[in-house]
Structure formats: C-alpha cells, structure tokens
Length: 197
Length: 197
DNA sequence: CCATTCACATACCCCGGGTATGCTAACATC
DNA sequence: GATGTTAGCATACCCGGGGTATGTGAATGG
Image 1 (cartoon, rainbow over the protein chains, first blue to last red):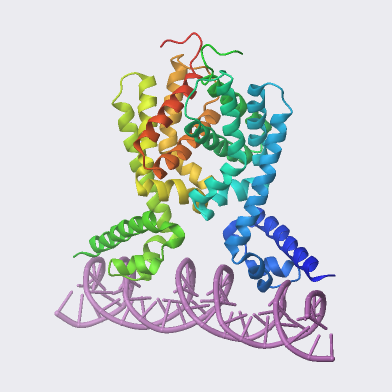
Image 2 (image 1 turned 90 degrees about the vertical axis):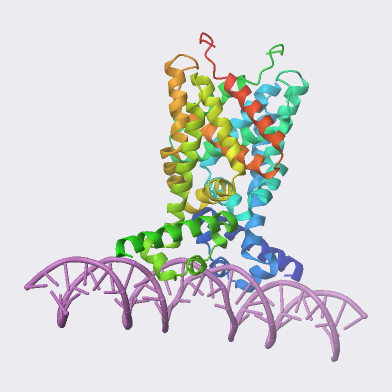
C-alpha cells in the first residue's frame, strides 16, 4: 500500500473507532491509547493525525453534525410547502436524538467540551443554518411575522436540542408525538396575522 | 471555636471558594487542591466534606440552582395575572444568563458533568418546576390549550437555556429584548382559541 | 543507491483526582 | 482532671491518562 493511502486508512480507522467510543463512553470516558490500540496502532498515530484528544473529538463532532444536518435537510426537501419543510425538519431532528451518536456526542458532550462558542459556530454551519434559512424563507413569503432571525433560531434550536434528549431518554415513541405537537403549537404563534396558510 | 462551628465554617468556605472558581474557570479548569489552599486548607478537608470534586460541584450547582429558582419565582410573584407571571419569570431567567455563575456552572457545565439525567432532576426541583406550575395553572384556567405539560416544559426550558447563553455572550442589552419578544410570539401559539386574554 | 522524509512506535514526563494513614485538639466519661 | 475516644482535618502516596520528545524503518525521490 502506498504511503498516502496508508495514512488515510489509519486516519479513517481512528476516526471511526473514536466516533464509536465517544458515542458509547462519552468524552471523558474515552482513553486515546485504547482507541489507537483497538485499530492496531498507538497514541502516536492519534497525535500525529489529530494533535490532541480534543482534536479527534472535534473532527468526530463535525462529521456527526454534518450527517445530521444532511438528514434534516433531506427530510425538509421532501416537502413542498415551506411550512411543511420546517415541520418535517424539526420532526427529523427531534427523532434523531435516539441515535446514540447524536445524543451523546452532539447534544451532551459537544457544548461543554468544545465550549459554547465553538459549538455554536459548528452548529450554525450545519443544522442551525437550515433552521435559520427555513425561518427566513417563511418571513420572506410573509407566512410568519417579520422579526430578527437569530434569537428565534436560538430559541427553537435550544428547544429542540433539549427535547431531543428528553425524547431519547424515555425511549417511548409517544413522547416524540407529544413534543412534535407541542412544538407545532409554539410555531403557530409565529404565523403572521395576514399571512397565507 | 467549637468543633461543629469550625466544621461548618470550613465547609462554607470551601463551598464559596469552589463556587467562585467553578464560575470563572469551569469544572475542568478547577483543581481541588487549589480551592482548598485558597481558604488555608488542603484536599483532605474537601474530601472529608464532599467526598469528591464532583460532590463539591454538585453542591454548588444545587445552591446556584436554588437561588436562581427563587429569583425567577420572585419575579413571577410580583405579577398578578398568570400570563404575566409566566412572562416575567421567563424574562428574569433569560436575563440571568449574564450572571457568570449561572452561565458557566448551570448552563454550560452542569448538564455534561452531572449527566443529563441528574441535571434534569435537579433542574426540575427548582426552575423547571416553576415553569411547569405556571403552564399547568394557565391550562387549568383555560388560557392555553390543554396538553401534556412535560414536553412543553422541556421545549421551553431548553429554549430559554440556550437563549440565555446567547444573550450572555453578546453582552448587548438589545438581544434580551429580541429574545423576549420572539419568545412572546411563540407563547402566543399556546393561547387557547376560546381562552380569555 | 543513497539521502531524506514521513508515518508512526516507544519511552518518558507530570498534572491532578483519589486514597490510606497519621496527627492533634476537642469532646465525652469517670 | 486524667484518660480514652472521636472528629476534622493534614500529609504522603498511588496511578491513570493526556501530552511530548525522540527513535525508527519503510516508502519516496533524485
């Protein structure tokens, strides 16, 4: 195997194993040497590729974050109406809290480990961006009351992050429906008085 | 000084110093030996009183949590109408994110350090409880649509936690008003069609 | 075919949470 | 008021694990 290919293989293996362990054991519970050993390498490889434990975690977070954003966007795009796109995206996000990777890595550890600022920047680059876009589109269309997008985005983003954790915890399927319908009510408050729909 | 008094004095000094440092340096940044040294004691005292670093943090969290809950409840009680009580409580909570102790200890570290389950239990015992009570009262009065209280509570609790961090970060005073008015809109969605007000 | 570099492995440092044990002054008991 | 006892720490130590400095051998390139 060529050297560049070997490098990439090791990198991907570390990433995959790290992702698995971060999801199961949480950031603090993961020990770098074991991650490396599990793929037949040592700490040296990990530090060579990612610089630090936090560096590996950061990369894992970006990966999971991006995948989640794509899933949410796909669910939204499957709908025609902007309002239904927003609802579908929210539902998908709420449901994905049951995914251990999303739950542990994104919702539990990421904000505290990366710090709120960096976490928010990464979140904005993926899922929160779709939310802000959807809200902007609805305002543009006159469907919801015109207002600053950012505070509203943060309110809804926080609401869904927390709810996703709540849903995931009580593995019940009914909780998802309850959260969705409660969120629906809240969203009704945004509807502009003269708006269509 | 009597022994019991000395014990309590040391305990309170550790608590106060720990609280100060947790707020400034974050949980990971605090080293227990330094906390003890700052009050003229050693690690031994800290472990004698709190059992572990996490034990001290847990106690600090409970303290800050309780104070915040009291502040929110006081702001709510200053209002007459149930709806205004809810709004006043929410506003006070959002504004208190600028308090470094609330921000760093409660909003950033507590969920990740204590784990979501324990954090939620503590949150429910203080601030989230007031929120749930206010919502229940409004439903009872027919002011908002009857529905399960818990999912709604978690949505709003999460929304406000996240927004409080957002407000605290961009120290701007205008952001608080933006968040409050956005939250107001969302709450409008809860109003029962036939309800008073 | 030789020099270089790159992708790691190995060995080591050291901070900091946790623990086991020692010490002393306060309390109880007679 | 002497004496055992305990409670409230201090001291000394352990050790896991993140980080680093250095070694090494195999692929690259000239």
